[in-house]
Image (cartoon, rainbow, N blue to C red; front, side):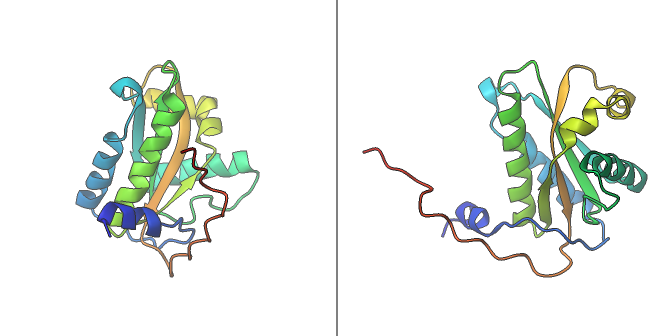
Length: 173
């Protein structure tokens, strides 16, 4: 089977990570894959915050947990958090950012890195604290958080795939 199709079939969301950091060269390959996601009219509305700094990772975790209403780590111990945001002035921003997330997760899987899409980036980056983080990086404009792609080495086996539902595809020949 084609390697791309095999990766699509075998990638799973992982929710328990070892603390080991991903090598920079692997992280760079994953990030590059994200930058090649299709975007509306090729306008590249998304940006990616690559968070490997433990203090910032923990700060984002606390912000996300607050939105979720919990004290637990919504990033499941993953050492790397890639935050995808997209420029709301583009009509396709939500789709563009979602495609970036998909590319990140598929590239990670291909390279032996576990991943999971974590929500609530929108709510995080609507807060003054979230806006301050963007401003501290010199990011201006109207960006909306699309998601967090957490990355790391799985601590245990990856979950099995759920069976595909029968009514997924409808042909119109």
